[in-house]
Length: 305
Image 1 (cartoon, rainbow, N blue to C red):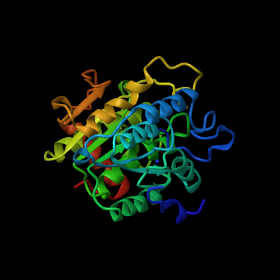
Image 2: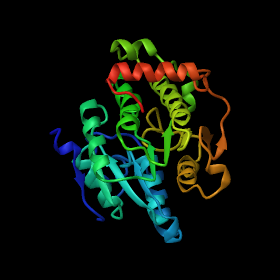
Image 3: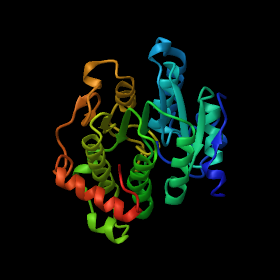
């Protein structure tokens, strides 16, 4: 994969995990068995057949990272069906072609491999070249891969994008209730280490979201735990996922649209539209937030403004 090709913008009018080499292959449209489960494909068809537009005056411009499959693709599909302008994100050109086929209404697809921080920096530049966004949803994530990749995709890349991309009016970060078993691993961040597990990355990203909400009080910044749902990531350890798939992406839609008073706040952490109070002690600790931002800045040589 060429690094220049992986930071291009693909297509105008015809974006889960940050999927790598998977392509539609034998899965046809929606990539069943390749990058989506049957449950996700069925939900995508439900959205196409049942969801209608908002009034044009309510439409927003939204970027979603990791929108080539799973919850990211479902979020993109629903917001498109509602009449919003959506820019997707894929790891590489092949996955970008898949999501353009699946969701032909996308305004554009930006590509960049979030496991490579140099590509993430170039991706930030390309996003800024596209102009202002009302909402950015930091959906991309990895599970079941090497810790170094988990750290880059789930934690360092969202920090870099938050710091380098022109701030939208609203940012939404995806985390997990597994953050409760994690640690900020500040020493690893500061010293260039990579001993950061999935759980660690999720407490990092949730703490980052709360820090950004505090540092940028005029903007709306929230975090979402979507639950354990039947996506390819959800089925990573076997074909069982107890939580509702639709509820797993509708909180992101609800926050992005901001059509209800409860969805218009900042500094919130939600599970299925309800505030989630069971959080790691670091999440609401302002000193821990500042320590995390300092560790990120040392690691990346980029300071959040």
